[in-house]
Length: 273
Image 1 (tube, rainbow, N blue to C red):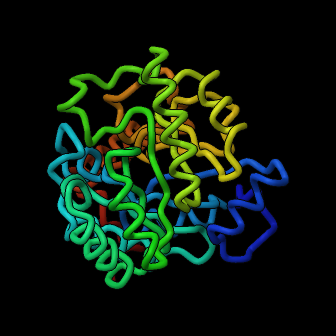
Image 2: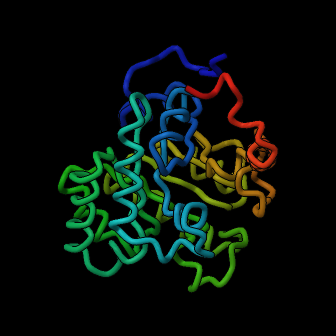
């Protein structure tokens, strides 16, 4: 039975996300990294799919997002785009692909758009990456911004703890958020910041905010698909709600398959030619 909660089959665009904020309709976003899962996520009615650099963790087994390359992100995004009919597809720009050199940033963003078919890119950071964001926007490429906990900066901060708890850091985040809206970003991810701060930022902006560990006042929510489905069982932050326990379901199913093969119960007579 379908669990699709929307009757609107129109393609989701950046403008439609803006309209959703304006009418108070929450935005549901999930990650996906491959064709098969992207097809299911899209069918379930998700508004936007993030091809996240979290693929470095959940697909490749790295401990941080830093190792994943631009070519690998394009591969994942291409696979996702092939499976999606309705959701807006946003692709993360990986670490090293936009920091420090705005011309390289633009060239890399163009590669993502041309080669994968994604409809927007996501970039972590505020004032320090403004030049790169502005150059990408000047080419007509939509940019989703990302403030708060920025996993690509793990070696700078040394921890994945809640960000912007101090007055100074909160003030910078609010300043960066307004700047990112002003230069033309179409949405802003707020990760692992105090809920009151996320509410304040959301109310101060006309563009939609997407929260992850940022409370319920943001205009939408995003989770990593493997986390919320219980496939990745080693990650249990407070903000994560598990909607299924697929990790154990999959292990049990494969265990039954192994048992049937060993017992010569599979294939049976009706499963052969």
